[in-house]
Each structure stands twice: as structure tokens, then as C-alpha cells.
Amino acid sequence: MADFVRVDSWLWAVRLFKTRSQAQAACRGGHVSVDGDRAKPSTLVGPGTRVVVTGGPQTRTVVVRQALRKRVGAPVAAQAMIDETPPPPPRVEQPGLPQRDRGAGRPTKRERREITRLRGY
Image 1 (cartoon, rainbow, N blue to C red):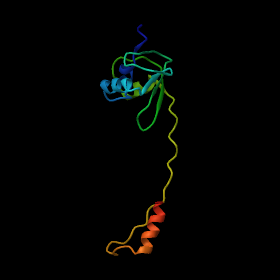
Image 2 (image 1 turned 135 degrees about the horizontal axis):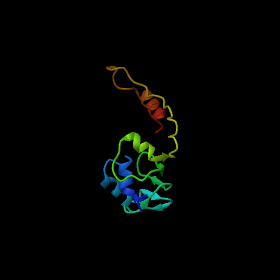
Image 3 (image 1 turned 180 degrees about the vertical axis):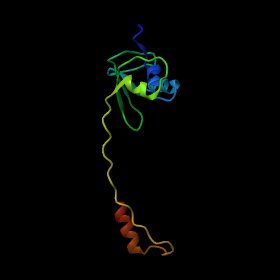
Image 4 (image 1 turned 120 degrees about the vertical axis):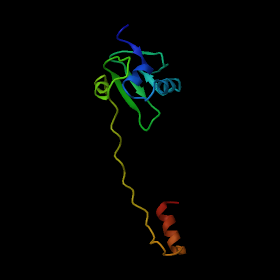
């Protein structure tokens, strides 16, 4: 059993969560799955186990390479897991909204209609 550790403890140790209680809350909320099954905080993980963490700006998919019980530095944490998270999609450049010169007064009705059309209302 030395090669297995609780999933909440491991998520905290490899720095996917700032605190262990945040990792526990994510497990209880259904945001963590281990090998495709929803995980309780006490679920055991070992080398080769796939852990998926959802609920943030992106979904993180990692494979356990080394079972850690204590929090370690960032370089050691990076070696303890294989990050299979797909890269985020490229950002789409949006055209800037036209700016009126300061002190130019209130927009005319025609300008208000153009602003409305540009914003897509």
C-alpha cells in the first residue's frame, strides 16, 4: 500500500490546489474523477492512475507518475505527474470599439445606431 495515496492529498502535494481542504471540496463537489469514476477525497491513486480535475478555467488531465504524501517544490511536482491537458484554444482578436474624443459631446442619433450595430445588439 506504500505506492498509493489519497487523491485529495496527492492533488495538494503536486500543487493542483493551494490547500488540501480545497482539494477535498473539489472531490466532494464532483469536480475530480479518477480513471473515469467520480472520486471521493479518500480514493486511492497510484502510478499510472488518470486524474481529471474540472471546475476551473480549464479541465486538467494528469497521470500519476509518483505517489506523494507531502507537498513538494514545483520542479519535483512537475516530475510526479504527466500533464495531458490539451493546450487552450488560440485567443480570438476582437476589434476594438470606436472611441469618441473626450469633450466631443453626446453622440448623434446616427452615431448611436452605428455603435449599436457594431456591438451587435
